[in-house]
Length: 256
Length: 230
Image (cartoon, rainbow over all chains, first blue to last red):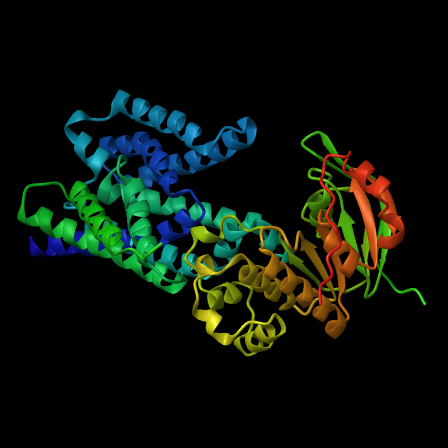
């Protein structure tokens, strides 16, 4: 039992930490909420994975990629604001999932269930997290410049399209991993909340990155641990801890 | 002896089906300060961005071979979305730490500013940091969008003086966009009046007659008196 707990704790810490880290980049790109519709859109994929009994991240990933392409395409085609498209896309994802989501496993799909993670799934998740973290760390300076001003970046001959594509792939990966711990409904929260808390407190970029990563890690660790001691599900607990950290950050935020 | 650094011929820019610039042709000599003057929506910023190849265009834009260009944008509205110290902003431009001292000196700021958060700077300080950023690639040409917008009068004079100094010390070619005539009179060697098309070009004192200014702005923009800056 202890082994199973450690497995879920370590996986959760990796996923939560890296989600927070990537979330800091998403927040400075003003797309912190984008993980929400993507997570919702992953629900049909999660449902399929639950029915056929394979890793839900694997089920989620193609649907998330589809979501990235869809939102990107619709935004270009319609020129509607992303938040409006978000409403269309995520509701559709949830609706479709409910046609065939096995109802006894709905909780795992909606709010995640890391407690029964298998060893091979855990190793797979941890390796993927490490890869996402390293690539994110590598593209961070240039992505930040692009987020600040695409013109400045282009004037420095940075291939903005290439970096945006890599970044979106990382987002898709982290959402697919994130559904494991917080389900399709709450993925926006694991990327957004640590980053906004961090921004309340950070004086510079180095602190911003470190705090986002730390808050993501701490929330995941606390949520999964408390879930072990109680009968409450880990996913929602992680979000509640994350929100609690956010409240503290509001109290201590730098004077404006 | 002419030493042309930029040649623009029959430049047309169309964005989303709307003609923004039509049939522009002009040349810029090395070391020259060229002001691009025009009302809001005249296509001034678009012209700068096009010269940087940031926007699609038709026609010819020919820079002297291998010339390095620095760009100072008008505003960076999103920069406050990221907690960023001045030092880290320089790092984003891959500016070596041993050069930052030199750059700060040339833009008249002290080393202490490196630790400050970008969001806490005054608009004048921030403008200088942007200039410093653009200078870090050792450009021969500086493209500058609205150098004085949003800066208080004291800050304006210091940014103006800085441009004057940079021009002298580095033999920079400067192209700047503005709708403020004061800076045009005192800094520019030559001006281009722009409103989609080129309306006039030449030496400021000869070109900027009250009638022309009124034409350019369709009489809707108030006239800025020339202010002497010591």
